[in-house]
Amino acid sequence: MTRASKLALVAAAFVLVPSLALAKGPPPTASLPAKAKAYGRYCQDQSKKHVAGQKGTPFSQCVTAMAKLATGKTDSPKVACNAMSKKHVAGEKGTPFSRCVAAGAKLLHDQHK
Image 1 (cartoon, helix red, strand yellow):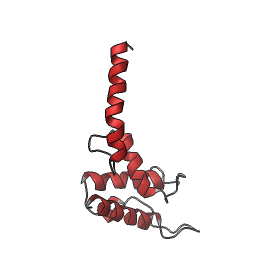
Image 2 (tube, one colour):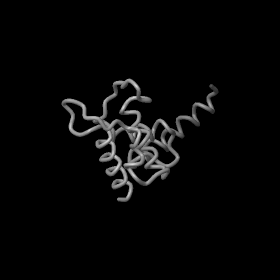
Image 3 (cartoon, helix red, strand yellow):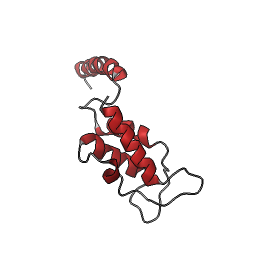
Image 4 (cartoon, rainbow, N blue to C red):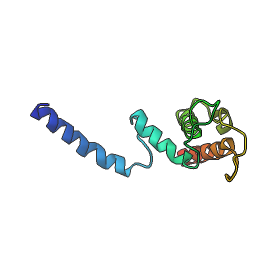
């Protein structure tokens, strides 16, 4: 890396870091990993263990559902979380589906503030 490119990188970091710290959520131009991390905040109560017969973990399915809601691909948490399991898990409140729907409703509420 040349000195000029390093300087440009540092200048960009000084511009972006304060604006990201003040924002409530990821900016619309944020990278996909930054948005996914923000969506994961709503799915913290989901299991990160893989379930046989399911694509991905309940957590990753929930994050995908939150992304669908946030980007407007659907406006219904029930539709977005449809891939989630509707079976009760011992020791957990509700089903993965019901927790995802509740998280989706919270995401939509937070977006409309």
